[in-house]
Image (tube, rainbow, N blue to C red; front, side, top):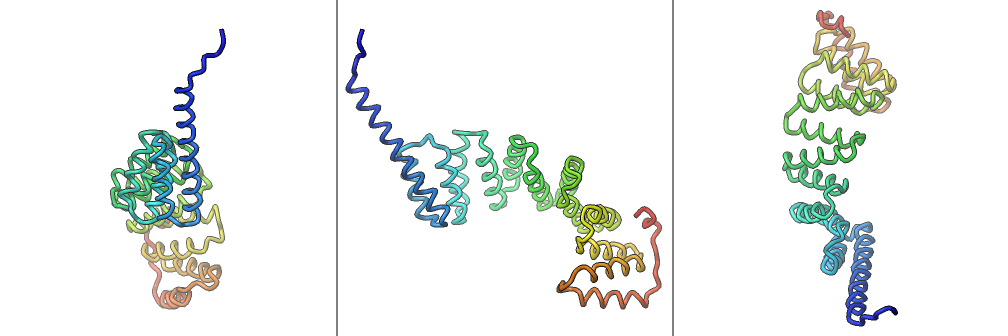
Length: 253
């Protein structure tokens, strides 16, 4: 039995294939325009592509990124939601949804999509750091500290987690733990001069004037052309005339 030729079917099928090809052309043009930061023109091309083919989730992602760059976050999120329906496990969709919601100030949804991103890429430290920073922003410091500690335990050489954790301790006026954590930073990177300044400040807050002077002097030695070098030098001179009082907690450092 020979092949039955259905002219009507082939005509319709051929037309559909042509439409998909045209949608791809619009999509490629949109991507190039977006990469060249011509976001308004890119949006027009993305919309043409989507009008022809509504099943290409990458068109919605590109459209959302273009809207985001124009600071139209509501439309960006709307486009990303459509992409999410088509591909809920696309890491780029979850990442962009997290970012847009955070920028808008919708931290609840931002956290939700960051957690979704982490579930998709459990080893992505940047997502975990971003989650901790958002918790800091909404004054959930305990959650942030817990995440930083978890990162440190998983990646003990990831210095940024130590720095952020130590800085948060300082913000919370927990100078003892801040100094201890900044010392961990110096174990990883001896020439990280900002840690010496931070430890000096912590020591001074805790009453250890001699220790503060020692770390301030180390900071000045390493900081080169730092803008606050004169101010720190002045503070050292002031401390020289002050009797040192060491708090009992500093024996832990």
